[in-house]
Length: 128
Image (cartoon, rainbow, N blue to C red):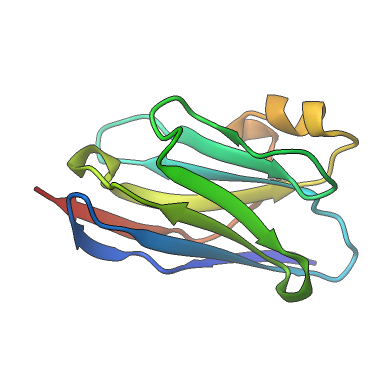
């Protein structure tokens, strides 16, 4: 079975940084496509970025490009979301989502409804 668990959320002032972690328990090596999503109250879920753990560069939403970085630690089965220069509009519940796919391009095309596995979310609050 696959389980994803986020951690690292918290409260920070604008301009600050946080690093979120998404730890994966994947006994069948199913998941190789992971995305970070966020959802603020009253807003639609937004994809923040995606990484295909089989290779290739992460892909980011325009709203976070240049500020957020996704990385992976295969030894720990963990994907990270480093968030720098945080803004109040980054305030949201952040989720990681995962599934299996065949290529980097396929992974980048995944929408939220395409992901089978989701974590429980971690709250990020940025104050001005």
